[in-house]
Image (cartoon, rainbow, N blue to C red):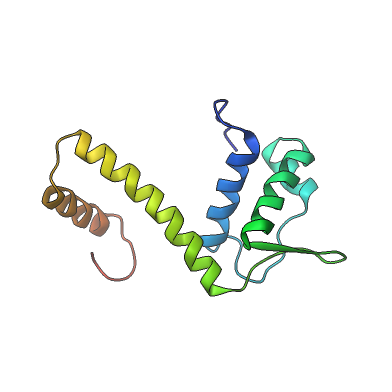
Amino acid sequence: MPVDDTRPIWVQLVETFRLRIVSGHWPPGTRIPSVRELASDAGVNPNTVQRALAELDRSGLTSAERTSGRFVTADPHVLDRVRRELATGFTDTYITALTGLGLSLESANALLAERWSTQGVPGDTP
């Protein structure tokens, strides 16, 4: 995992893990890798990973079962809430960038529709 030195590593891990969960990389109800595995993969201290996982527990995305490990929530409402939060943040960044370039809403929507179709995204077109 590339690390941004301007932000705490545990915050970056929370973001990475949240994306893994809402994207289905870590499917609902599945056991996630151990703290030691995650720390080794990320090249960070296990305490840093533990802090990130504690935040995921607090937000309801994961839960720790004392003898079985940590699991992704199977609650679709929690997953939808977090997915929307992430999408809102990405959308705000997109809006800020495009308005900074002087694009109108109409132009931005046209660009999004054009790019959406060229990305081969399954599902409805915007």
